[in-house]
Image 1 (tube, helix red, strand yellow):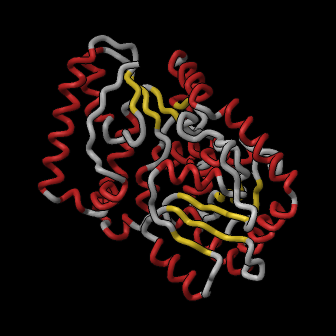
Image 2 (image 1 turned 135 degrees about the horizontal axis):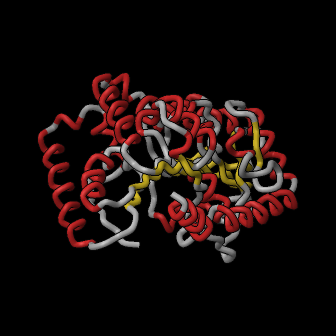
Length: 344
């Protein structure tokens, strides 16, 4: 595989700022010009290839890529992963800047019509794209989502603490993740001081979530913000239970989030909100522990159930890890992607 890439975004916060209207800034527009110029120069040095595969978030890159592939008479495939417009909607960016929201919609719609092949991770997302952008299902192939098992892997030399039951959330603080549900579950569990919650990450809802924890006077919650990756991985490995997502937005139902796969890859038991998307890939109490979404008591009960049943904890961790390695590791996803590209 030949890689042709040029950095435009500095980080996720930068991407959100531009999507909120910051793209009007001449400095950002110049960054776009420079990034595509560098990309063009790299492309000219690539030489011959069979298929151009564009990764996420590449919906807007297909416009330039179409020129390259048309000139080279090569097919183009796009791994969609997530809808840029849906993410902008759920994070309130389309309300903050309606013009930018409309621009993202039309650019994504056009960008999805240019590739010869569209790759989606599941039937729900495929249906969403087909209905929203009037796309034919024949243009799609499915490739599972997962995690990088060269980064996320079991650390058997690390163990959860014995003096408490540690529950960990990691990721961005956004509406689709249902952080309020976790905080309210922590309130339900205040009478069990041995159960401690650790939050790693930042995001638009972090001030709101911290304020809620303060109002509820929770002494079983600790916020760590962002930390170095190795520190995060060690903290995850030393947790009894890892948490997924519990929101009820469209995005939260359409995908199995990274944090779920990353938890399974570390061979830790994961609790997350129930959805058909998840049940198609993972089995309750076999690979994962599923609960009703936006239900703090259900989450509190699930945590207590796993605290009381170490055998179930170990069973979910072991079988969840095995399911991940077999179907959602880099090697497994690579094989699925290879088959999809060879059968365009």
